[in-house]
Image (cartoon, rainbow, N blue to C red; front, side, top):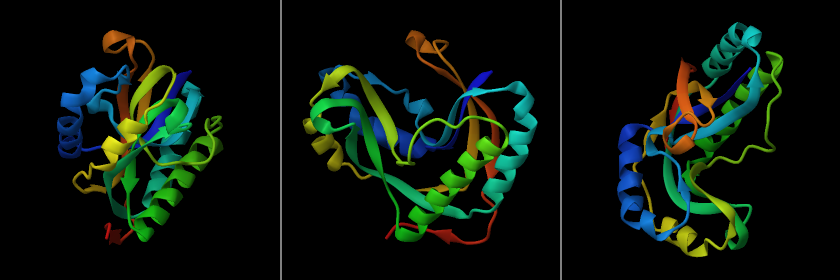
Length: 196
């Protein structure tokens, strides 16, 4: 059994821009900051993927990705789960135009269906696109951080593929997860969109 997720990975240029914004402020908070090299937008997550399901899953994600076209996103603003007053997670919001938002939602639905049809139990509730930046060990008020992130508007990037990633808990630096890229899948339906 392997812990896995399907994601749109933040490209290096966008990650570097966001990291440059956050770096001078990191020391002033008790967050367990996410590794910028691992920043991604999770489309579907499964805590346990049986090895016997991998070939079927690969085929199904290939087909799901092929039904979607490339679209443009950017990190702009911030938020917190479950709420800024008693937050456990600080995140970056994703900005997209209406067409890209629809395409992103359909892509997430297709990836979740691919996992499910391959016999894998999909974790999580309704899809809420976000980029996890940091976690707290106990709930705290992060309103000032959300306001700070609301001043951020990163560069646009094109989502033209999704990645299947294995997450190995406790194997990364400081006992954090180590991410292993398993495969990438191009979005091949003709057409593109970009934010307004």
